[in-house]
Length: 222
Image (cartoon, rainbow, N blue to C red; front, side, top):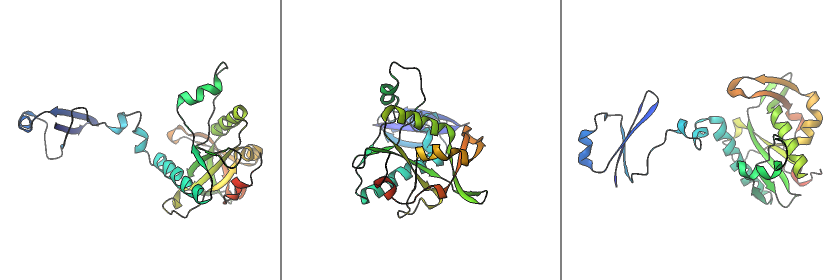
């Protein structure tokens, strides 16, 4: 077991591995800020920004979304819902478009097994006031992709929206609205364009269109 020596220079990872401690005397870039750890040679460091797998963990909205999913599973269990994770990898989507032209689709995060096999998409959003109402943003493209998915699976998709400002409280509950309800009322929603992170066109959905209760799932009819 040798030693990994790591520096971050000009936003680039500089890394060297040496097998024995006495070899450290030959490493010219060592300074007081250098990171050193002992491990196997293949335990090499990865700069998150260079990693396809991990780079999103550097984004606060991504971490918040995963926290919301974790919170939803805890709440669903307390509501006696049987929750199954849905795979989001590219391979699992191929079966829906096999032999057909490309159609953009988006599935939910979870399947509710004991209530009609509903799909639930969990979101974590900043709520804010617009035109006299408290609203959250929902991407127009995501609505279209969810509707396409429903067309394939004949399975309804429900959105569970957590208030990001309340996320640290384990007692916070999500707001529910179905994809079909969003589609039904989309003409009533204001539409805005968000340039940051290339989000694009979004509907401003008022909380008055949602229900903050798990009965929305239990009593849902497609």
